[in-house]
Length: 290
Image 1 (cartoon, helix red, strand yellow):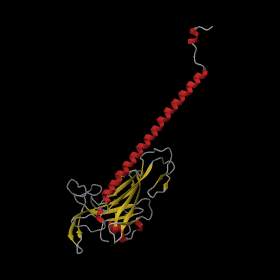
Image 2 (cartoon, helix red, strand yellow):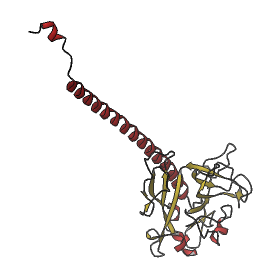
Image 3 (tube, helix red, strand yellow):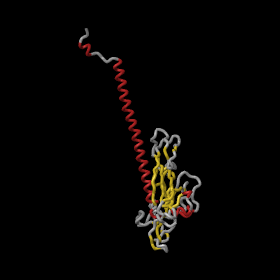
Image 4 (cartoon, helix red, strand yellow):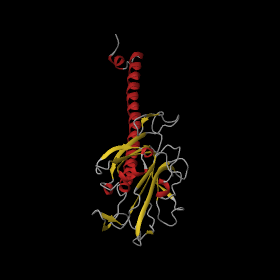
């Protein structure tokens, strides 16, 4: 007969130890899986927040500029009873595959300044600038998209800004760039990145009919517009494709581009990509004569 002391000193059996180890490993596995999942989810959430912020800034910049296209203060009344404007030049022009030379004037671009090959669109806009429409520099002079002093043009300040996608100083990081006409000779003014991680820019132009100058009749690519059509552009659809700053995906992950088609990143590219759309109305062009 075993004593009570002997019964109390009895240890765990091998089966009980194995069961306890299995339960412990399962608990550790669940905790580790949850931790790793939270880490991946956190990286994805941070990347999506960065992408959304970059897209918002880029679209807001382009909206503020594009909707100004063709603006000018009225200074007289023409023979048709319309207000005559101080700036009566071209207001907007775009290229589906980028500019051959973004330093060229708006008229030079219109005359044949588009690339034959390229992956991103580009847009140029012009409007009268004053203290009520743009930021002014320390001496009170209206500034272009880069904060540079605008030159006088026929007694007024005319902002002429060009937007396109290019790589940064490192030759790798893509960004939305602007080239203005302030700060000196327009042929030598530099361009600067405004928002990094912008990898794609697509633009479509809403053209009004002569009979209904305040309504978009159709949206077209830049290459589909005749020279006279640019005078009847009253809206622009803008799409930007934004990438995450870091590799956050487990593998290269496809996304949908501006035209809705599936895009497969290059092998080894584990960044997150998203496309964002916005439609911008050119209020200063509504009802403009063709």
